[in-house]
Image 1 (cartoon, rainbow, N blue to C red):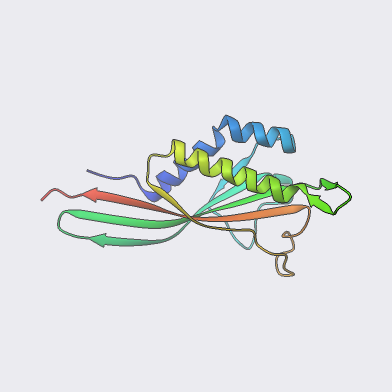
Image 2 (cartoon, helix red, strand yellow; image 1 turned 180 degrees about the vertical axis):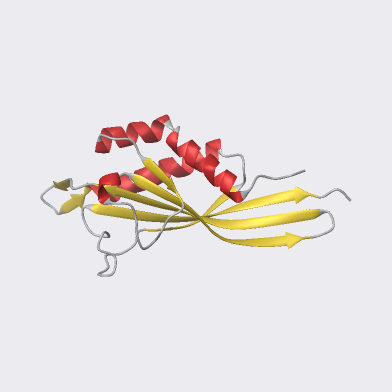
Length: 160
């Protein structure tokens, strides 16, 4: 029995996001455009801000375990979410930056769609909103980033 390649699963994830009515409706309502999904990335040359909202999907390291009857592949993959949102709310008690709420809502929608529509077992491991840094000039208001790390675990039975 042959399992899918990791990149085929990443394509399934990309398609689940692109074909999600909930994600597309959210992005159209908040940003007046559909989300773009990039598979693979050059970290030194990220997509321009005018591509927001966008997602980068990329794979990380893979661990292979083999036995006579079973092959297990565990592979990290990354979901890098970027939005542009300049709206702020001042309720008299402080300021609420809408982007921090919206990126969390979008990330939750993405996790839900992946869990619902991708057959491979996926475990979401870590979530991070990168801090502002001089070395990363895009990571500042009104651009918001969220980074998700997840694992794909495949088991392949071997004929003995």
